[in-house]
Length: 132
Image 1 (cartoon, rainbow, N blue to C red):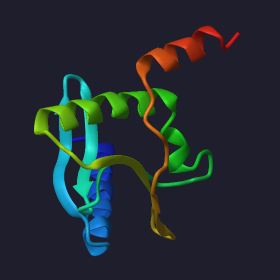
Image 2 (image 1 turned 90 degrees about the vertical axis):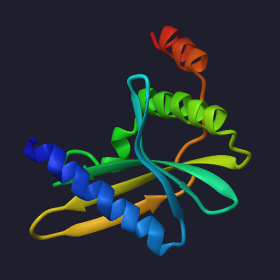
Image 3 (image 1 turned 45 degrees about the vertical axis):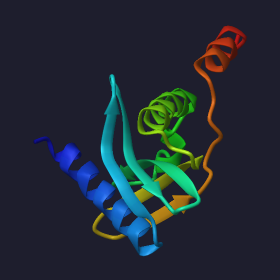
């Protein structure tokens, strides 16, 4: 397995541990729908939480959370909707991002609750058409 994949897996484990420490129940890890994937699906008994984990060795060029762009948000929304429908979930959905910067001199983990609101693909397509 490539080094960057191992680094990402380590970050996802750190994120899952953080959520467990906060009292969340981990329902799924690396849940796939078609070609889409949700890193962590968790519950806090009031909400179902879809978590994108971004792990970087440096935040020099970009903060990890900034990598969750509109395309990624749309993909997570589609996958979350599929999960909710297929599992007959009656909890309010929430989308979080866990950003990790980990290297020899620094280890930071930040949990952004309600990082973004769900959006539809049609909204994203309209936004792109009107961009220029």
